Image (cartoon, rainbow, N blue to C red; front, side, top):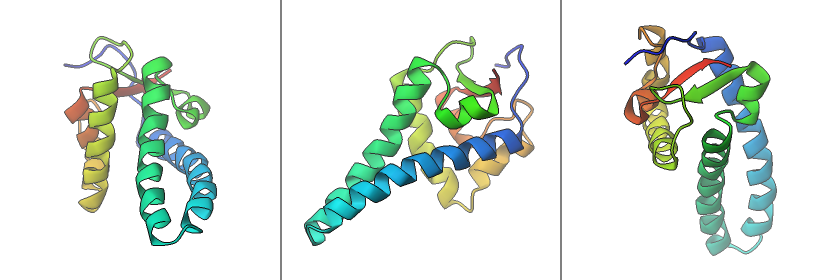
Length: 133
């Protein structure tokens, strides 16, 4: 289903991803330093906590405002097929499939370049659209 909206382009989506990656990366790096000092078990805990933080960041922002901090800077928004906010389930599906999209040579991300609705694999899986805010 297509929305009556202007879909966000590759550049704004890519830059918002970089901004969010830097922000989450800083938090995870600080946490990693603390947890890694505990030895091997701390390193394993740090990996799990990093994943929870990354997904939690998306769940919090996308279900409350439709925009992560990077998306806000780039003036884009994640919406469902009716233009409303995503549910927690949709955001989790989107996050999990984005890791798969990245693992397959980023083909899942690049898919938007040929898609009429500019959807990535994770957008399609979650029923989400990225539009101009």
